[in-house]
Length: 447
Image 1 (cartoon, rainbow, N blue to C red):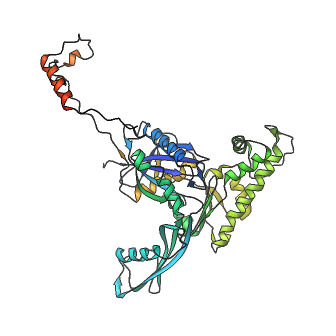
Image 2: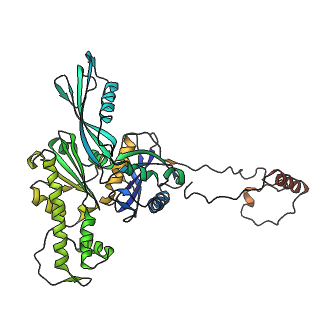
Image 3: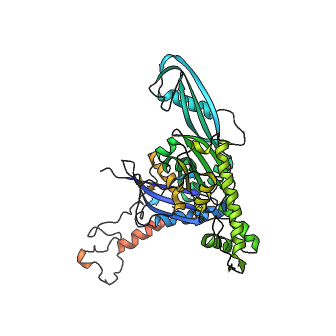
């Protein structure tokens, strides 16, 4: 059996940095062997790195945690795939066409030329195109999903151009992954496309479904129909909005977050009991959480109309992922609002397996990025450290004049011997030929 490749990924979200390492096998199956996370609430806003130094420190700790895993050690992470997400991430529809000589067989070169034409189309100058996702192709009068091999004199395609502010990638580069840590970026992957390719199944995407990724400060909505991406938007709303609303009751954000996680509910309860937490009336907290949760759900459901669909066009339902989706009864609130089937997203067990403990749903995004990078590239992200050249037992020792140690003498205390004249001469010669060392600069965090 061919040895698996080791791959690594980093996802920088608005509330934490998450890393993952896995082994990808020739049959396309990914075994996730390690995950690690660090909170970074004040370092990143809406998916964009604000504090470069603090974010770099957290990434360094993530890398260190991953490398200490028993299935990773003694390997070192030398490359990573980076997941891209953030408030500025969106899709822009683009139609392009090519006129061909009569009866031309469409090949990969023509399809690539069509894609390049779509990417080069003029869009908002403040945005950078990250990817171009085809919805459908038309060859002559025939619509197809797979143009290669078809014959025609013209080809037309509709693409979703995935774009974001250049600052999103630029600030990630400023964390110094390569310069400071010696870790090369193997590729940027749009997180929403990675989760959309992995979590909704083929039947759901063909019928029509909506994948909702609720984060701390943003919520990403992707809509699929007829097996293809039809809509992609990022909303500047997330579970941290709920936490901040609770702080209006004179609570620190840390306490508000704990209350939301432990006692929060997206649907109002029927209890009128006068309970309090940290001296604050629980009913008042409930009212705040319900109001904001309802606002978030209403904004999510409006995306169906913005995409040009009705609820009935999405019989595949709504798939919920992300940390914000873990709020009690969030899925039920969405179900009552839209009358569509709603269920939590799951990683497909036929493609993904885990060594040891299964990661929390908040790691689904970075695992999706890991899988996308592993299956769309042949990159190797980990390497073994170079072994030091140590002479085998019984060979000539480093110091001339010293007797070689035999296996039976290993571990025995030996009387120190006086250095021989040859040894003294060699040391003096070595010292005379070696230049004085310069002041060493502080070493990098990672080799």
